[in-house]
Length: 252
Image 1 (cartoon, rainbow, N blue to C red):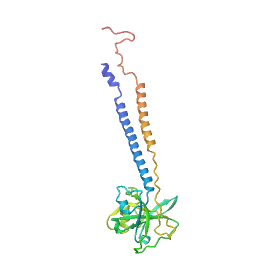
Image 2: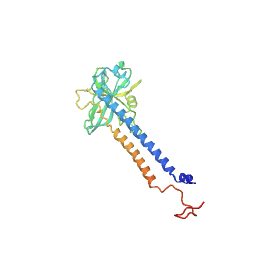
Image 3: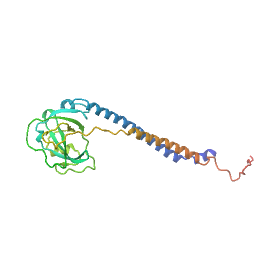
Image 4: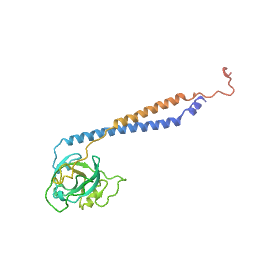
């Protein structure tokens, strides 16, 4: 009878809920540790690539992961190529980034080139004309993720989120388009000072260790909370029998 009463009084529901919450908190902590290691690798990759000299396109795009690599290439007609405008902000100033296609046949696929930033205070744009004049360019390779579900739809040739497929379609590109964007580091139109070529800073916030410690700390706090609740719980002994008199032993 004592065993049955003890089992009836043991907080199985609380124990199961705490065990599930503890497992979840530990899993989140482990996930943040994994994210921290991934972010450290990404930072190391960016720092290593930044110290390398620009390579030929065939070598860069032949790599397994060319992101952050420098590339030296020639884009015929880029100075007067058609472009789309991407709404952007640079150093707190609103403006657009001009994006054109580089169709050099030796690259195997068309790549989109972010030629640089133009402030909203500048209404002029580079001329657009058919030309085969070679433009030597140094650029940095960056991956271009698909736009999010909340991204605004483009309005003609004006975009509000990077979308290589849609941009290539507006620019009249035929055939495959590289999943990368080349951010120009040298100007395609050096005579036009309003165009400011640049790549986004390769700055990464690595706060995952703090997040991991938070999740593991919550897991430990949950254990302490569970133990405290067990200690505050009434005795698990069965209640006295109605025929039992306090201070006296019942005769056999």
